[in-house]
Length: 230
Ligand SMILES: *Cc1c(COP(=O)(O)O)cnc(C)c1O
Image (cartoon, rainbow, N blue to C red):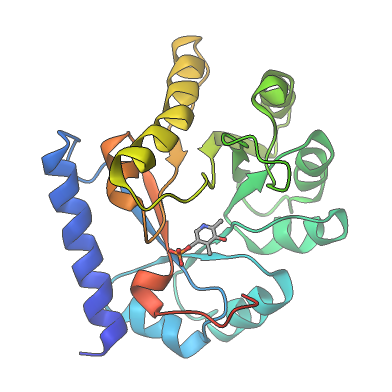
């Protein structure tokens, strides 16, 4: 078995362990393998042991891999920042987009989603840590964006996503993750249908699962370190 294959199996085992440890339903947390900066061959290794959802951040790089792996049943998720001129290709080639943070991008993805495909699944990216440099919508602006997304027929609003500030300490990680989960819960309590909480990366996925994540996005722990610029 290759290292990537072993890592996938080990991470899946850990996710199952954490589901148990934090009293989560079995299989309530999905694994998204984040393959930015990694090759189609490396993705194929992960696929070999049953991993079928992959996350990409950079459109041009992703399109090459999507084409190279088109014989496989892969569900592609776009998780990077989105410029307006990229929405058409994203709408054509991805099943999910986790990084929708404004009305313009939502409208373009809706309008450009090909009619031969099912509606595109989206998460709204929220800036929970309120850092000026981070992408994601402010918590104050989330309701108008949700209401708008609900009017778009070619787009299915699935949940919220965040990239919280990174802490080393487990308690701090949990506190950070709890902010997004509380928001998600309060929206659900208002009757908004959201089944996905996209939260948790290589360094904090235990904290994220403890706080209710339903989808963890893991790159480094599966594929190893990336070069700095990716
Ligand atoms: C790169 C990236 C990840 C994966 O991060 P790792 O620390 O390598 O697990 C998850 N989510 C987003 C949005 C990313 O850009």
